[in-house]
Image 1 (cartoon, rainbow, N blue to C red):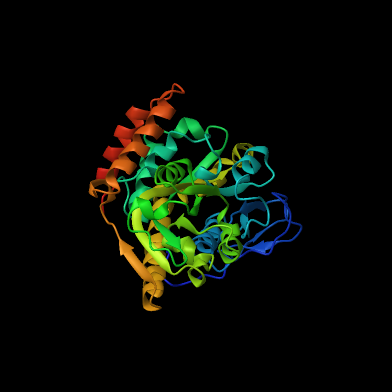
Image 2 (image 1 turned 90 degrees about the vertical axis):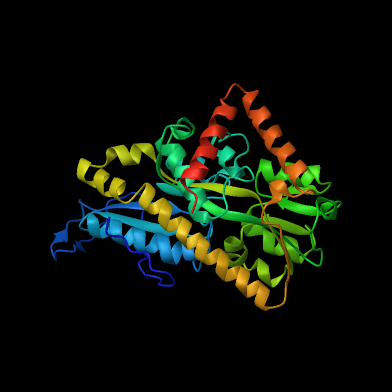
Length: 355
């Protein structure tokens, strides 16, 4: 694949075509200076929740869309819709299934109970970076351990965010007892269990609602990696941060299956060649850079930092995280799914993807 994602370089490649998977009414110039006629061009609408200024848009999706257009000689155009303007963050996967959008990014934890085996990779102690989490998820998918959960779409690449951080306003969290009585945004069932077992009150909110919720005191804090904390400007409000990997979010970029199947074989190959491990790795590396950047910015402005790098072996946090892990596995196993088996596969993938 020819895609190059250089750190800090944003490629302005947002395509200003209109229509949902409609054939363009104009001609376009291909990489070899030939033209694609109006009947040759297929426009695919991609929906995601990151702001248009986020690195996910500028460093990943814009270059990716440009690469696909070039590789298809102008016959495939991806139109990007950031900031959840085309579908809500918790309904994007279903929007892809029903064809409302052609390609979409979904935080799996936003759909409770839908991707139970995949979310095993989110359990504490398995991933310590965006690259490791992305690699784990892609390997579990490629090996067929979680692929059954996505049979109603055409997955393009798995996305793993960096490790979680508990961000609060004037409330340093050093032990689980410090969460008692606080309203903390929960990004997934796993993080919610940890918060609740610690005496806190987990609150379900999409990341796009967090700024005003923190600002108005609706919540006292949030559990979120550094990258989206910076993307959504939450570092402007929060001033105490506990770096504790109690979970890592699993995400997915996926495509409507019928739309993919309707493409001729050569265009399917373009999509395939720009999917899978190469993109999963690129996203993980971007998250690593962004996590470091926003962490350093918060530290530079004097925010309180609490570091708990090995929480499973921490005397205060370890028992709760172990209990939450076992509860999640037991709950999934009770539905008839092979949770323990997939957990062992996730542990092996964690070791394989260690970086």
